[in-house]
Image (cartoon, rainbow, N blue to C red; front, side, top):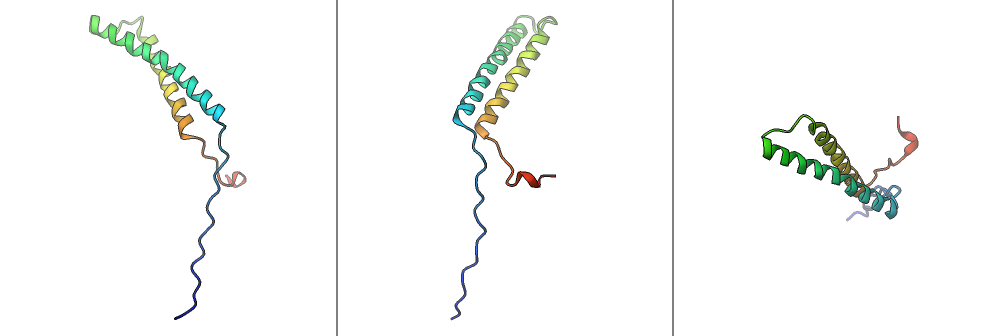
Length: 94
């Protein structure tokens, strides 16, 4: 039997800087507030389609703007939950 040492494992990567809980909560609350225009856009767009079969030209830009703001809220909530991925060595980025 030979006396071989077990292979040396590389060190575990250290986690990057964690975002504070206060900032995450602020991002989630802001995202929920931004969801409200998207909900209103879906509501008014759905009512407009159900009554006339098409969206009126005067309300269509507002519905589109509300949907874009709502998608921004979804992105903000997703970013708050997902977290920030800091690079392991910031000085070595190209």
